[in-house]
Length: 267
Image (cartoon, rainbow, N blue to C red):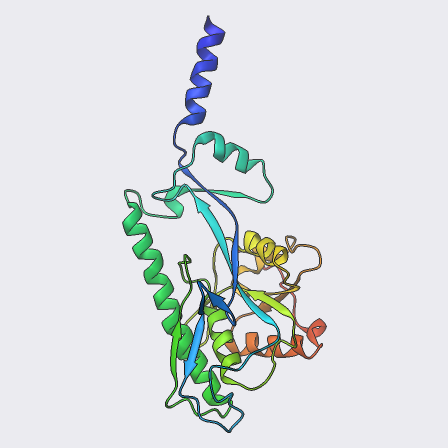
């Protein structure tokens, strides 16, 4: 009888809601392509000349992939202790205490609103950083209008890739050289690339979807070193300038000279 009671208690414990968030590699999106049937980045008002593409019809033969993680255990998407335990045993999943991901007491609507707000802020900063960079390339951006759209993705971590995609669309050059380049990192209006979460899972998603190169924020390099999937080449970047020049170098077949991530001792 004691054994049956113990077994019943274990089963009950396993089916109870878990205080952890379970993350796995999420979908990727080509910022030069479409989402939900609409262009992710739409550009208009670009004058011809000065190396500019002249319209939003410029097409690069390659891909610039933003990467994501799928999260369960967030508000509105609970997981059980059993699911968290199985995730802990899976090398392609990560578990994180829920309080490190969202505030205690936050409901589903509040969570979605926060994620959407961070995405909107990221897109706004990406536009400013990219237009300023394009101006430095000699492109007249005074009349340029930009809109960004992506379905079912939130948070700020796609900022750098949005900026790279916009610059690519503003220029007539084929920056990627037909290659599939993934990356992640926040961006601010000054073009500084910041750290993000879940980079190990994002590299797995990038490799799964055909990327051979991955642009990683310098601030995340400790999480990158030792976890880069086979046949995926990491590149350390800390600014939009470094990221754009890396894309160009990769497109020209000169990517081997680009810096790998290097682990830095924590103080």
